[in-house]
Length: 150
Image 1 (cartoon, rainbow, N blue to C red):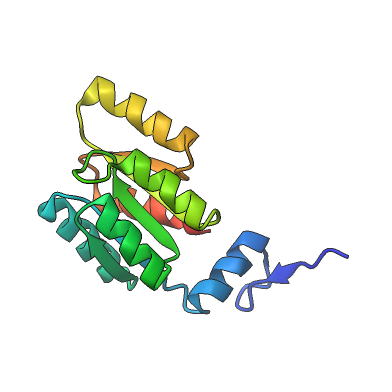
Image 2: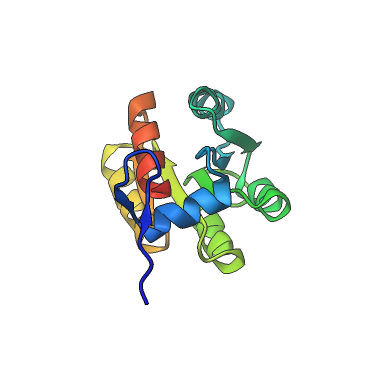
């Protein structure tokens, strides 16, 4: 038997993934999001945008610290840079997928126009659910987060 869930305010059907997300995040739609980037300015920008959208945020400076934060706090979503010291984004995506296959991941990179797209495509092939090229606008970040969490 297939269960259909409905939005209580509009009576419109909603996806199973949206239901799972609401159950994980709470009815208010607030997600716990881990931001992993070695550039403090980029990290701060992302955290400010997500906090303004009423999400709970965690921060890490590299993949190793990020993986540790992930294992402790189990966020709904991880946003991570591909080029970082200690453990790069590709290694971190693999480790996250091993630890929690269902975690949502958004890869970000600003390594240079031609290389950037190659690495972002590779990140998606290895398990990232979305990819954003730096620099990106707050609206683009929120759109990607919304798509991945929906």
